[in-house]
Image (cartoon, rainbow, N blue to C red):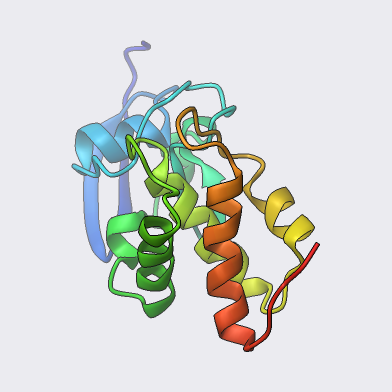
Length: 164
């Protein structure tokens, strides 16, 4: 890593975290190593798997693809920061009920992605759910159970069964 560090302050789950970071340090590394946000997982460090998904300034991002310095004076929410949210709790329960978790490594990124998607799409089709979740990889469950879990929460919000 370079030798010239940059001082940043990031609001992580409601708490300001200040640190000196290298210009090439990822937001993922900052969150895990400086902010103690171990609910953000590192799966590939290339943006392929989605285990590091967080909400950055209101939109989901793969934190391994964002530089920590880009988050200076910005807000980041991890699963821990949204865990008291009703929609997050419904998704967590649905993942358990539908068997959409096994090892649990991908689950934080999956839940963050699903919650952000359902906040913006109140009546999604099954295909829209599949597309929304397509940036998150799971090596254990297969995707049917995950899509079923998200679909179940979406259908309860609208009061109707989603199909196709």
